[in-house]
Amino acid sequence: MTDANANPSVVALVGLSGVGKSKAVELIGKMRDFETVYFGGVVLAELKARGLDHTPAAEADVRESLRAEFGMAAMALKSLPSIEAALAAGRDVLIDGLYSYAELKVLREKLGERLRLIAIHARKSVRAERLAGRPVRPLTAEEMAERDRREIDNVEKAQPIALADFHVVNDGSEEMLADALGGCLGEIFGG
Image (cartoon, rainbow, N blue to C red):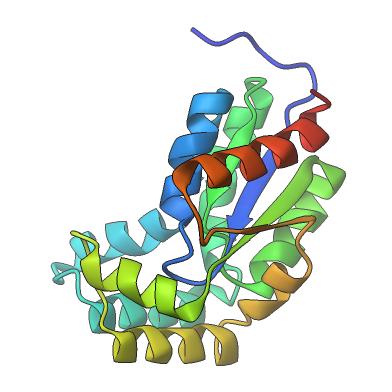
């Protein structure tokens, strides 16, 4: 059971694929109790609802169709009820994978200064190695480059990364990532 927080906050992780957002979520979860909201889960749920396989092309098609239907802020809009319910219950929220500038604008409008962004970065070669070796939804270097291009050109993913409150480089060890994230959380939560 978690104690209610009188002034809960929202921390969103932003970054291109392969930078280590999932690892950061895991590490942050060990440091502080958060209600985690995975924006990519909106796409995965829609894939399942449509009976589609989890392939990079199918995910891209579903992301684009959701945005065509609901606008570029689709993931944030579809996730807002979960975020607001957690905040109303006094829970801090961790958003795994904010994608677009439109999503950032919607969240800033709804959450104001309660929202803090942590951008995670990694060298392209490190990202390619991670993505090729991941057990779920692996990507080749070419697929990664295509996804990067789509996300920057079509989704405006670069703006939230550039506008983040904190920037962490994840090219080293897990301990180095944990230390960097701990520093961000210390500044956000004052401890």
